[in-house]
Amino acid sequence: MLALSVSLRSGYSVGAVLLLVVGLCWWPAVFRREVPMPREMALWAVAIVVMALVWSMHIMEGGRLITSTLGVDRVTKYWLVLLLLPALLAGTPAVGALFWGCVVGAAGAGLTALWQTVGQEMPRAQGYTNAIQFGNLALLLGLWCGVWALHVPGWRRLAAWLAAGMGLLASIASGTRGGWVVLPPCLLLVLYFTLRRPARGVAGPMARSLGLTLLICMPLAFLSPVQERVQEAFTQYASSSTTGEGTSIGLRLAEWEFAWSQGVRHPGWGVGQMGYEQRQREAVAAGDFPQEMLKLNHAHNEWLDMFAKRGVIGVAGLLLFFGVPLALFWRALRHADPEGAETAGPRRVAALCGLVTVLGFLGFGMTQVMFAHNNGNLMYLLAVSIWLAVCLADPRRGSTHRVQGHG
Image (cartoon, rainbow, N blue to C red; front, side, top):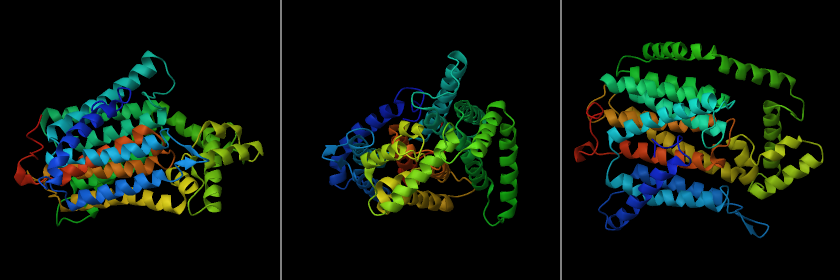
């Protein structure tokens, strides 16, 4: 799932289907209680169910069933993910497979970006989705590789660093500014928990982590593609009119204003997807918002989009969807041995990768609706499930091995 995620069209779906097949085979053992369901995984399953119910709101509008990615198709994926969970509980994902999955996935993202921007002379790399989704998911793969690079020895560390660089290259080639904002805080968190040692205080590791984060991120700010995109954002913001016509930044501001107004007027249940699009057309026809807004069916902000379409109920579900895994990974990270003991090492890596996943999607969602796209939904659901399964592994079962022992 990780290796093919962004370098093939719907590559993440290949691993998802295989996991589903294995999960279905294990359900009889679940009913016989031969495969235990840890409390933490049960909580995550509850969060998935709640989110599936949130997506089911307004799924029937005007007597018409929404069957697209924003309707039945998306809801179905959430229920199917529940069916594959036994595959992750019956046998803990192999550490070596996860390591190489991240490395190959990030390297594939970088090669795809190079092929599109250099070979095909595309202005922005977009993989097989759009530039924003591709850039954000490629950056996430790169961050996972960065976590591995800090926890594996020898030539595997070099491979992980190279793959992390390729994921970052894909992000830069995509021109996705929202991902660049997410990079420093995620990198700071990874470095801090890697450098932290028990009973040695917080100030020292935090200072070193901050210094290393600046050392890594500052040179990126001087790259020509980054400077151009950042300068463009400042220029567009300064020159944006009240309608935001003609610029991507101004258009986002208009979308945010429109979504907020719809949520305020319908705070309980929201207006639904079709209602949102209908009111969008009416607002544009009245001249209150730019014509370009009709090209998009979402608000370019996860929270405002949810508030407008599903009200405070949807926002509460989204908060649970992020909050439950965030708390579980944070708890797992704090309980893992910071010294990297043999049994705690893989779980510590998984907890860091899981934490980066949740924080990454939270940050990406400030300027993009990641869950309006199939790849955003599946990459979040599957990645959180996989990392959580490793965090919950019982080292006595022998299915979770030393990080150093794989290659």
